[in-house]
Image 1 (tube, one colour):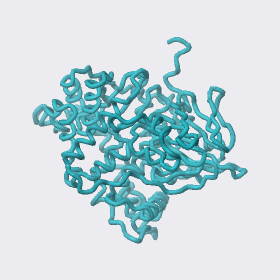
Image 2 (tube, rainbow, N blue to C red):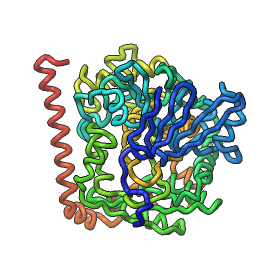
Image 3 (cartoon, one colour):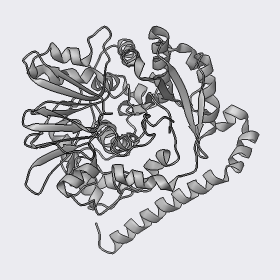
Image 4 (cartoon, rainbow, N blue to C red):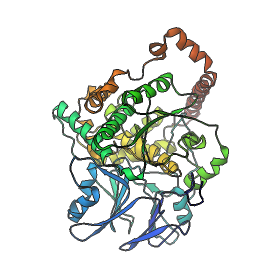
Length: 508
């Protein structure tokens, strides 16, 4: 490798700091002044500066993709729009981005480039995508509790974060970077309740295809994570449609580990072949504990180690260009309906009940943070969006996926989501509820984008793929996965037992 090539992994890659003065972890970082605040950022973080029709300056950080066919780019839209209306444009942009002006910061639909905020010892307000850099500036301590991967709560529920005394901006909030004042903003555009289902599906398919068509192709290929399920197939179908319309270089791949289901091993190469594309299997390496230092340097000690496993195993290491998959797709599935309690005026009781779902104590650290979010949701209702369906956006998306994306910024690949778009969420929430729960919209969208991909089943059982006898033999051979499942069940049962014991001894 030539010495001029960027390293495969780099701490603080694609991070930013926004505050009253320049602050940078090394001299490579650049700076831009926005009125009274200074934006300091890694030179590998994509940046677009634009002046709106009223002469106000805006900055787009990250990758913003127009999803409306034949519409101008996000930067050109801003240039043609008055200051007060600029924020409304954001609902049509997919990708992974942050919109900034001197007096406002807006997250993308699922908050995938995070905005953490705190104050330093002099009371000055700072924002950053990195908890590590924000801690260095403001001196916050790490939270006294940690998420527990697949056992209990797996992330800090926004607006809390991994730092004591700091907060993570919700996608339904905006912040004034000069003062730190937080306000509310629209999470999604109005949901078109009652609209024709076929028209909705047509527009959703067009949105996804257009997002991929607007990807800057000179920056490298598009790597699409492909499984045997429905979400990734819809995304792959949209990428295939863009491949056929504008020549997008699409490269499907699958991460293969011991726990990878059989259908995720068998179907992706067949799906790629149906689309006329080569499939790349990526086999997980051993966990490189030497990379744990990089994880802590870049993301801090409070990210669940389980969420860092792909990086520790070297998945996607060495790939360059863009990468996407089936993330930010869950709001319309309503998977929390029936698991979460009904929304009531007793917000503490709702927060406690959510904590129980995640095997956490009522009245404990996580229950209090869930309650804080429940209060925010109750104060900012959205017609047609139940709070259980808002959870995948503001909690699973902004609270769980976003910190993982921040860690993956250490890699060369630039990750984004075509479904990370307010309009996409609004349109999918207008689909018939049963269509969302059954996921029957998936083959409908594939039929509009790359219909040949519907010829293979979605997530078939092992017996359906290879017959019951061979399926049983495969399960028996996978001793490591059986052992992992046993450990998980034991950990969950032990956690539940400890909570019940606490209750008997006088806890809540």
